Every structure is written in structure tokens, then in C-alpha cells.
Length: 188
Image (cartoon, rainbow, N blue to C red):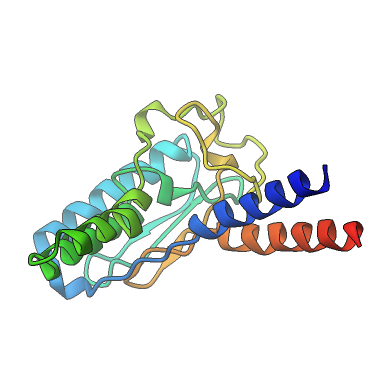
């Protein structure tokens, strides 16, 4: 029984750690027209995920810095959705990794597992927003949103300066580590 509990605690810690990716790129490596398109898509996605109830919705197409906050003070988990700056940056980091490793299929596989598999894939058009932008939220939710989960309940980080924002899953990982430590202490 205790071994199963330890295994569950360690598995949760591993999942939380895997979600805390922060990919960076040089914004100048992206064509200005693409950066403008990225910011336009980011703006629209933030608007959709906040159900048009916006407090802040900014994106700088020079630095790729952005800020997305809903009128209720929450920030949607942009890193889980496509058409967002975090996902565009993730996809560019993946493309850069592939280009840098053309001579090694093993290295390209690592690019996929280390980068591409962590890029947002949820469709913001299919997000169930719970009917209102002023829905209460918990930005410390333990799971990534599903396509039908309220976007405001996603772990989130919404401000960036030229790089993808670090999701709060990092902080979730710290919490899971504390739970795992408590489980180990209880076993002693």
C-alpha cells in the first residue's frame, strides 16, 4: 500500500515538472509580418478565452511581450491553446531545434519530445467559457484545461517579455513536491 502511495506521489511530481516548460526565442529571428500576425492571433485568442470580458489585452509585435487578463482578474492558460504567443514561440523553438539537428534523427526526436509535445493544442474556439467572463476562477487548478473546461480555471501566466510565459504548473510542481514530502514523512 505504501509503495503504491509513493509511486502515485512521484508520478504526480513528474507530471507537474513536465508541464513547466519555458521556451524562448529571439523575437528578431521571426519576420516582422509573422510577429504582427502572432500578436493579432494572440489578441483574438485572449478575447475569446476571456469571453470578451477583458481587463488587459496587449501584445508588442517587436518584443513579443504580451499581457492577457480577463475582467475578473484571471489570466487564461494561454500555453495550452494554439494561436497564442506561448504556442507560437514553442512552435518556433521546435522548428529551430529541427533545423539545428538536420544530421541526427535521434536529436530531432528529442526536439519533438522536449519541445513540440509541449506546444499548445487546444482550440480556443471550442473552449467552454462557462457562459460568462466573470466566472470565478482558480488559477491553481491541478490540470490543464480540456477543450470543454472553463479557460479561466487553467493554470496560467499572462505576461511575457519576448519569451513564452512560464506556466504556473511550475508552482504546482512545488506543491506536488510538498505533498510527496508529506507522504514520505507519513510513511516514516
